[in-house]
Length: 44
Image (cartoon, rainbow, N blue to C red; front, side):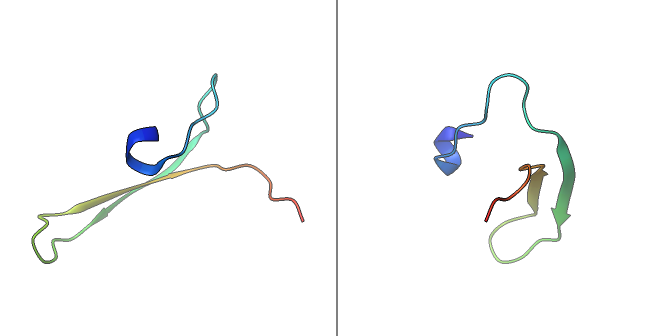
C-alpha cells in the first residue's frame, strides 16, 4: 500500500474490505481492479 499510494494502513487490524471492483479493458490495460476499504467516520 505504501509503495503504490503513499498511504500507511493502521496495524493491526487492517480496515475491513468493502468491495472489489473489476473494470473492463480500456486502452493498453487488459483490465483494472479497484479495492475499497472502510475508512471509518469522517470528522468535520
